[in-house]
Length: 292
Image 1 (cartoon, rainbow, N blue to C red):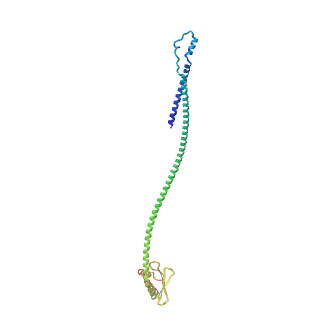
Image 2: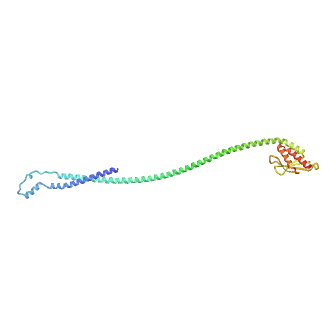
Image 3: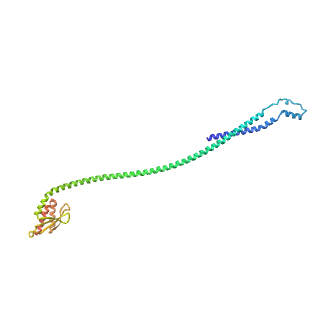
Protein backbone atom coordinates (compact mmCIF):
# COMPACT_ATOMS: atom_id res chain seq x y z
CA UNK A 1 0.00 0.00 0.00
CA UNK A 2 2.85 2.41 0.78
CA UNK A 3 4.44 1.64 -2.61
CA UNK A 4 1.19 2.49 -4.40
CA UNK A 5 0.91 5.77 -2.45
CA UNK A 6 4.49 6.65 -3.39
CA UNK A 7 3.77 5.93 -7.08
CA UNK A 8 0.61 8.08 -6.89
CA UNK A 9 2.53 10.97 -5.35
CA UNK A 10 5.20 10.67 -8.05
CA UNK A 11 2.55 10.72 -10.77
CA UNK A 12 0.94 13.87 -9.34
CA UNK A 13 4.34 15.52 -9.02
CA UNK A 14 5.07 14.84 -12.70
CA UNK A 15 1.67 16.27 -13.65
CA UNK A 16 2.38 19.40 -11.64
CA UNK A 17 5.74 19.78 -13.35
CA UNK A 18 4.15 19.41 -16.81
CA UNK A 19 1.46 21.92 -15.87
CA UNK A 20 4.10 24.40 -14.70
CA UNK A 21 6.03 23.98 -17.94
CA UNK A 22 2.89 24.45 -20.00
CA UNK A 23 1.94 27.62 -18.17
CA UNK A 24 5.41 29.04 -18.60
CA UNK A 25 5.24 28.22 -22.33
CA UNK A 26 1.83 29.84 -22.58
CA UNK A 27 3.09 32.91 -20.80
CA UNK A 28 6.05 33.16 -23.15
CA UNK A 29 3.84 32.77 -26.23
CA UNK A 30 1.14 35.18 -25.03
CA UNK A 31 3.18 38.41 -25.66
CA UNK A 32 4.08 37.21 -29.10
CA UNK A 33 0.41 36.53 -29.86
CA UNK A 34 -0.52 39.93 -28.56
CA UNK A 35 2.14 41.54 -30.64
CA UNK A 36 1.03 39.55 -33.65
CA UNK A 37 -2.61 40.48 -33.04
CA UNK A 38 -1.73 44.10 -32.46
CA UNK A 39 0.27 44.26 -35.65
CA UNK A 40 -2.05 44.94 -38.59
CA UNK A 41 -0.79 45.69 -42.12
CA UNK A 42 -3.48 48.34 -42.73
CA UNK A 43 -2.40 50.27 -39.65
CA UNK A 44 1.20 50.00 -40.54
CA UNK A 45 0.39 51.00 -44.05
CA UNK A 46 -1.66 53.93 -42.84
CA UNK A 47 1.12 55.16 -40.68
CA UNK A 48 3.50 54.75 -43.52
CA UNK A 49 1.21 56.63 -45.70
CA UNK A 50 0.91 59.47 -43.26
CA UNK A 51 4.60 59.54 -42.69
CA UNK A 52 5.57 58.81 -46.23
CA UNK A 53 2.80 60.15 -48.35
CA UNK A 54 4.76 60.77 -51.41
CA UNK A 55 6.07 57.14 -51.44
CA UNK A 56 4.26 54.81 -53.76
CA UNK A 57 2.58 51.53 -52.64
CA UNK A 58 4.75 48.42 -52.71
CA UNK A 59 3.74 44.92 -53.87
CA UNK A 60 3.45 43.62 -50.31
CA UNK A 61 0.76 46.09 -49.50
CA UNK A 62 -1.41 44.60 -52.12
CA UNK A 63 -1.25 41.08 -50.48
CA UNK A 64 -4.36 39.83 -48.66
CA UNK A 65 -4.31 39.73 -44.78
CA UNK A 66 -3.85 36.29 -43.18
CA UNK A 67 -5.73 35.33 -40.01
CA UNK A 68 -3.77 32.83 -37.86
CA UNK A 69 -6.59 32.17 -35.29
CA UNK A 70 -4.64 33.35 -32.30
CA UNK A 71 -7.80 34.32 -30.47
CA UNK A 72 -9.24 30.88 -30.85
CA UNK A 73 -5.91 29.36 -29.83
CA UNK A 74 -5.79 31.65 -26.80
CA UNK A 75 -9.33 30.67 -25.86
CA UNK A 76 -8.53 27.03 -26.25
CA UNK A 77 -5.36 27.48 -24.19
CA UNK A 78 -7.33 29.30 -21.53
CA UNK A 79 -9.95 26.55 -21.44
CA UNK A 80 -7.22 23.93 -21.28
CA UNK A 81 -5.50 25.83 -18.49
CA UNK A 82 -8.80 26.03 -16.59
CA UNK A 83 -9.45 22.34 -17.10
CA UNK A 84 -5.88 21.53 -16.19
CA UNK A 85 -6.08 23.72 -13.10
CA UNK A 86 -9.33 21.96 -12.13
CA UNK A 87 -7.65 18.62 -12.74
CA UNK A 88 -4.67 19.66 -10.64
CA UNK A 89 -6.99 20.92 -7.91
CA UNK A 90 -8.91 17.68 -7.94
CA UNK A 91 -5.65 15.77 -7.86
CA UNK A 92 -4.47 17.89 -4.97
CA UNK A 93 -7.67 17.29 -3.11
CA UNK A 94 -7.43 13.60 -3.87
CA UNK A 95 -3.82 13.58 -2.72
CA UNK A 96 -4.84 15.39 0.48
CA UNK A 97 -7.68 12.96 1.04
CA UNK A 98 -5.43 10.01 0.34
CA UNK A 99 -2.78 11.49 2.62
CA UNK A 100 -5.32 12.00 5.35
CA UNK A 101 -6.64 8.49 4.76
CA UNK A 102 -3.06 7.22 4.78
CA UNK A 103 -2.45 9.02 8.09
CA UNK A 104 -5.67 7.58 9.46
CA UNK A 105 -4.60 4.15 8.25
CA UNK A 106 -1.17 4.68 9.82
CA UNK A 107 -2.83 5.77 13.08
CA UNK A 108 -5.10 2.73 12.95
CA UNK A 109 -2.11 0.52 12.20
CA UNK A 110 -0.18 2.10 15.08
CA UNK A 111 -3.17 1.60 17.36
CA UNK A 112 -3.48 -2.00 16.16
CA UNK A 113 0.24 -2.41 16.68
CA UNK A 114 -0.07 -1.00 20.22
CA UNK A 115 -3.00 -3.28 20.96
CA UNK A 116 -1.15 -6.25 19.47
CA UNK A 117 1.90 -5.36 21.54
CA UNK A 118 -0.25 -5.14 24.63
CA UNK A 119 -1.87 -8.46 23.77
CA UNK A 120 1.58 -9.95 23.21
CA UNK A 121 2.69 -8.68 26.62
CA UNK A 122 -0.45 -10.17 28.19
CA UNK A 123 0.19 -13.47 26.39
CA UNK A 124 3.84 -13.40 27.49
CA UNK A 125 2.72 -12.74 31.09
CA UNK A 126 0.23 -15.59 30.87
CA UNK A 127 2.91 -17.79 29.31
CA UNK A 128 5.33 -16.91 32.12
CA UNK A 129 2.65 -17.59 34.72
CA UNK A 130 1.74 -20.85 33.01
CA UNK A 131 5.42 -21.81 32.85
CA UNK A 132 5.81 -21.10 36.56
CA UNK A 133 2.66 -23.09 37.26
CA UNK A 134 3.97 -25.98 35.15
CA UNK A 135 7.33 -25.89 36.94
CA UNK A 136 5.56 -25.80 40.30
CA UNK A 137 3.36 -28.73 39.29
CA UNK A 138 6.42 -30.62 38.04
CA UNK A 139 8.17 -29.99 41.37
CA UNK A 140 5.06 -31.15 43.23
CA UNK A 141 4.89 -34.17 40.93
CA UNK A 142 8.51 -35.03 41.70
CA UNK A 143 7.82 -34.62 45.43
CA UNK A 144 4.74 -36.83 45.14
CA UNK A 145 6.69 -39.43 43.20
CA UNK A 146 9.43 -39.36 45.85
CA UNK A 147 6.81 -39.68 48.59
CA UNK A 148 5.14 -42.52 46.71
CA UNK A 149 8.50 -44.25 46.25
CA UNK A 150 9.23 -43.82 49.97
CA UNK A 151 5.80 -45.17 50.88
CA UNK A 152 6.27 -48.06 48.46
CA UNK A 153 9.64 -48.83 50.07
CA UNK A 154 8.06 -48.66 53.53
CA UNK A 155 5.23 -50.88 52.32
CA UNK A 156 7.73 -53.42 51.02
CA UNK A 157 9.64 -53.28 54.31
CA UNK A 158 6.42 -53.69 56.27
CA UNK A 159 5.38 -56.55 54.01
CA UNK A 160 8.75 -58.23 54.60
CA UNK A 161 8.43 -57.65 58.35
CA UNK A 162 4.86 -58.94 58.25
CA UNK A 163 5.95 -62.10 56.45
CA UNK A 164 8.71 -62.64 59.00
CA UNK A 165 6.27 -62.07 61.85
CA UNK A 166 3.81 -64.47 60.25
CA UNK A 167 6.51 -67.09 60.03
CA UNK A 168 7.51 -66.44 63.63
CA UNK A 169 3.86 -66.59 64.70
CA UNK A 170 3.40 -69.83 62.80
CA UNK A 171 6.53 -71.26 64.40
CA UNK A 172 5.41 -70.03 67.83
CA UNK A 173 1.94 -71.44 67.30
CA UNK A 174 3.43 -74.72 66.19
CA UNK A 175 5.66 -74.74 69.26
CA UNK A 176 2.72 -73.82 71.46
CA UNK A 177 0.65 -76.58 69.89
CA UNK A 178 3.44 -79.06 70.44
CA UNK A 179 3.83 -77.94 74.06
CA UNK A 180 0.10 -78.03 74.59
CA UNK A 181 0.02 -81.50 73.12
CA UNK A 182 2.88 -82.50 75.40
CA UNK A 183 1.09 -80.94 78.37
CA UNK A 184 -2.13 -82.66 77.47
CA UNK A 185 -0.31 -85.95 77.17
CA UNK A 186 1.45 -85.33 80.47
CA UNK A 187 -1.84 -84.31 82.09
CA UNK A 188 -3.42 -87.49 80.72
CA UNK A 189 -0.58 -89.55 82.14
CA UNK A 190 -0.80 -87.72 85.46
CA UNK A 191 -4.52 -88.27 85.56
CA UNK A 192 -4.05 -91.92 84.76
CA UNK A 193 -1.37 -92.19 87.43
CA UNK A 194 -3.42 -90.28 89.99
CA UNK A 195 -5.97 -93.07 90.00
CA UNK A 196 -3.31 -95.28 91.52
CA UNK A 197 -1.52 -92.62 93.59
CA UNK A 198 -4.34 -91.97 96.06
CA UNK A 199 -4.70 -95.56 97.28
CA UNK A 200 -0.92 -96.02 97.15
CA UNK A 201 -0.34 -92.79 99.07
CA UNK A 202 -2.84 -93.84 101.71
CA UNK A 203 -1.06 -97.16 101.94
CA UNK A 204 2.35 -95.62 102.59
CA UNK A 205 0.97 -93.00 104.99
CA UNK A 206 -0.51 -95.81 107.06
CA UNK A 207 2.47 -98.15 106.88
CA UNK A 208 5.20 -95.51 107.27
CA UNK A 209 3.39 -93.62 110.06
CA UNK A 210 3.48 -90.52 107.89
CA UNK A 211 1.43 -87.41 107.49
CA UNK A 212 1.76 -84.58 104.94
CA UNK A 213 1.54 -80.91 105.91
CA UNK A 214 2.10 -77.56 104.27
CA UNK A 215 5.48 -75.88 104.73
CA UNK A 216 4.18 -72.28 104.38
CA UNK A 217 5.27 -71.99 100.69
CA UNK A 218 3.52 -73.09 97.52
CA UNK A 219 6.43 -75.16 96.22
CA UNK A 220 7.22 -77.00 99.45
CA UNK A 221 5.67 -79.98 101.33
CA UNK A 222 6.40 -81.12 104.90
CA UNK A 223 6.51 -84.84 105.61
CA UNK A 224 6.22 -85.75 109.34
CA UNK A 225 7.15 -89.29 110.61
CA UNK A 226 6.18 -90.85 113.92
CA UNK A 227 7.02 -94.16 115.62
CA UNK A 228 10.65 -93.93 114.65
CA UNK A 229 12.12 -93.98 118.17
CA UNK A 230 11.72 -97.30 119.99
CA UNK A 231 11.97 -95.55 123.35
CA UNK A 232 9.42 -92.86 122.50
CA UNK A 233 6.87 -93.69 119.81
CA UNK A 234 5.42 -90.17 119.98
CA UNK A 235 8.65 -88.54 118.97
CA UNK A 236 8.49 -87.08 115.42
CA UNK A 237 10.92 -86.38 112.60
CA UNK A 238 10.25 -84.32 109.46
CA UNK A 239 11.76 -82.90 106.31
CA UNK A 240 10.68 -80.29 103.70
CA UNK A 241 10.57 -81.31 100.04
CA UNK A 242 11.08 -78.61 97.34
CA UNK A 243 9.03 -79.24 94.16
CA UNK A 244 9.75 -75.98 92.26
CA UNK A 245 12.13 -77.69 89.82
CA UNK A 246 12.12 -80.96 87.95
CA UNK A 247 14.53 -82.60 90.40
CA UNK A 248 13.40 -83.03 94.01
CA UNK A 249 15.40 -81.39 96.79
CA UNK A 250 15.34 -81.44 100.61
CA UNK A 251 15.97 -78.09 102.29
CA UNK A 252 15.28 -78.67 106.02
CA UNK A 253 14.94 -81.70 108.26
CA UNK A 254 14.70 -82.50 111.98
CA UNK A 255 16.67 -84.15 113.37
CA UNK A 256 19.59 -83.25 111.22
CA UNK A 257 20.79 -85.89 108.79
CA UNK A 258 24.01 -86.48 106.94
CA UNK A 259 23.85 -84.44 103.73
CA UNK A 260 25.66 -87.02 101.66
CA UNK A 261 23.15 -89.67 102.69
CA UNK A 262 20.29 -87.36 101.82
CA UNK A 263 21.89 -86.62 98.38
CA UNK A 264 22.13 -90.34 97.64
CA UNK A 265 18.43 -90.78 98.40
CA UNK A 266 17.59 -87.77 96.16
CA UNK A 267 19.64 -89.20 93.30
CA UNK A 268 17.65 -92.47 93.45
CA UNK A 269 14.36 -90.55 93.59
CA UNK A 270 15.24 -88.23 90.65
CA UNK A 271 16.30 -91.20 88.56
CA UNK A 272 13.23 -93.33 89.28
CA UNK A 273 10.78 -90.41 89.62
CA UNK A 274 8.94 -92.45 92.32
CA UNK A 275 8.03 -90.63 95.51
CA UNK A 276 7.86 -93.83 97.57
CA UNK A 277 11.64 -94.21 97.20
CA UNK A 278 12.09 -90.84 98.89
CA UNK A 279 9.61 -91.59 101.66
CA UNK A 280 11.18 -94.95 102.52
CA UNK A 281 14.75 -93.67 102.23
CA UNK A 282 14.16 -90.67 104.51
CA UNK A 283 12.42 -92.84 107.15
CA UNK A 284 15.40 -95.17 107.17
CA UNK A 285 17.77 -92.22 107.65
CA UNK A 286 15.65 -90.87 110.54
CA UNK A 287 15.54 -94.33 112.22
CA UNK A 288 19.35 -94.66 112.00
CA UNK A 289 19.74 -91.11 113.38
CA UNK A 290 17.44 -91.99 116.34
CA UNK A 291 19.37 -95.14 117.09
CA UNK A 292 22.72 -93.38 117.07
